[in-house]
Amino acid sequence: MEFRDLEYFAVLAEHRHIGRAAEALNLSQPALSLSLRRLENAMKAKLMKRTPKGVELTATGTALMARVKRLRLAREDVLREVADLSLGRSGHLRVGAHPGVVSYPLAPACTALLKDATDLELEVTAMTAGLLPALRNGEVDLIVHDAVPPQDDLVQAYLCDDPFVTFVAANHRLAARKQVSIQDLAQERWARSGISANWDGFVDASLAAGNPEPRTGIRTDSQPLRDYLVATAGLVGYATRRSLKEVAAQYRVAEIRVKELERVRRVHVSYRKDGYLSPAGHRLIE
Image 1 (spheres, rainbow, N blue to C red):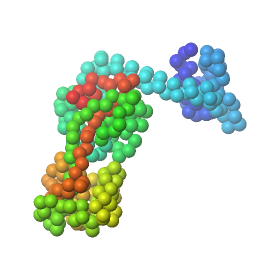
Image 2: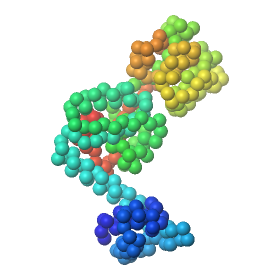
Image 3: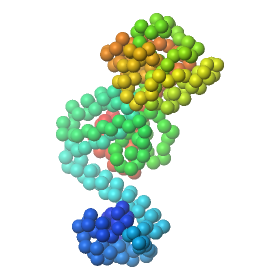
Image 4: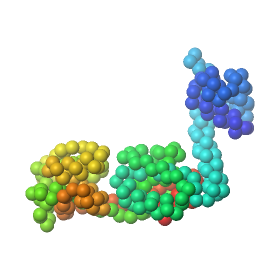
């Protein structure tokens, strides 16, 4: 079996048409058909069947395609590992991160790494969802995220705790209080920042206290917009204590203590057990 035939098979499976696949590979159609027959002979199984519109994978072909995807990732890992070993502190590191952990702890870690690895290119993508699939598909090398249950195929490491706090504008009626109860928030409107798990916690705490479900003033994935509206429109916000310090540098806001809403974000980093993580990736984690 030749790896080239597996690659041709993968392209054919993606296009589902011999003509289009041959064009993408810059091959003749007979050459591509010969490659498929050669692979089927080596596998001793039919991998594709012809249809009026092109070709379709058989059950065996579908199973093989799943393996080929892993082989492609493994090949990319090998090539990148060799490049990193030969180039030292250079290369390309792809990081996926939940937006809430970008300013801390990721940003200071990036600063330290970039000062140390002057030829390294960092690519950081903030994602509110889909971090684990992106990691498993090889779209990113590691992810920084809120704690999740242990995953058998991932290496996970604890980084830090980041407590969540409730905040309002400095001139809000609740701003001067030493302690605020969940009942005090019953009629307030919230600036939701798209973190559903936290909102579920608000709902549970409010209902447990005999209050109606919390009212939403705005729901947005934009934290700057959330912060601005809390500071100017009388809404109530929820953020980590570290990020609130950044908000306070821009706007007159105040933290209010609400015992029922006290929570701690546990920040973790994860990468694939069967994948290659470059020295730059390990240094970023450190």
